[in-house]
Image 1: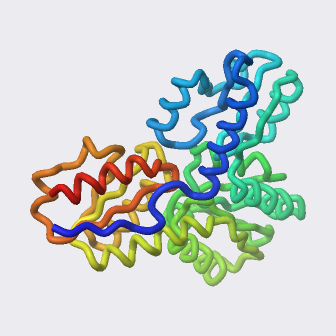
Image 2 (image 1 turned 60 degrees about the vertical axis):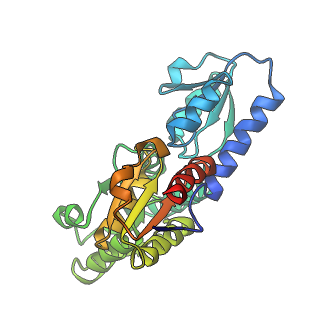
Length: 283
């Protein structure tokens, strides 16, 4: 059995930057008491657990952060309203929002300030989507698939802008853009908000899917970009499994395949990918 590992597997620039900022805060304030993160710093439970061991506390509500403390904003960002509440309470905010997410926020803010209604391709409950929506000046519509988009009743008399959660599937976004432009007869501008790293990672996975009999995608089960990788590979027709760690690998099944592909989401530590690769090589 042969295994092939995607070159893009593992941390993206935004994730690396967020963790570097968190490490810097821990180093600068070793005796400050507890350092807080608003939501998981990245969507990987193993990483979150490691930082919890260093005294970093993850909270899901601004009210759970004591006045005057230090809070690191997760890579997915937080809403404008939450950021303002934290600042008003004298909480020191360290912004670890991914630069690509921050850029998408500013594009949405500018376009909707010009009177356009936001059409956003993404998962409505995802923290990044909540962050993006908070920068829209007016009405917004969120949809998570091409079919969902087609069901939206849009007013041709209005002006629109189309954007996407930064980790969404580029081919589906292009399909949505083409449909809205050619069939809905809308005054529409398309904002390029999907991260280049996401497009590269998905493109590489599709190319490798043509070479292998089976694919392993490593990453947190709560990671949208990791789930999307598995979906892209499955849509290509290659059998795929999504695991968080090497301990979850179905070893008996893997022995049946001639060639296995391995990739990982943008929030998956190299250590986890290395451990999975080591198991494959041992087979």
